[in-house]
Image (tube, rainbow, N blue to C red):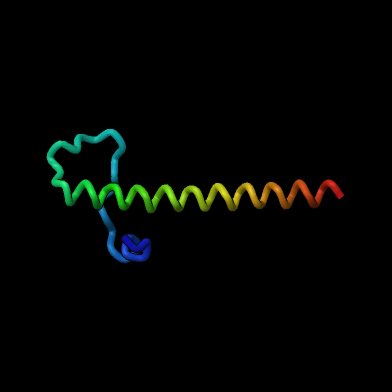
Length: 62
């Protein structure tokens, strides 16, 4: 699933721990894709924060 697709149409929120027993295999696959996209977005944000911290540390060491 393209991240732009998520921005174009509002999808229902995923609630962690909610009952998923009534979801079809297709719905579960979509849920996993959305979660994978969100995980990737979080990893990118973490990397950006580490880069900012590293740059600041290097700047103040000089």
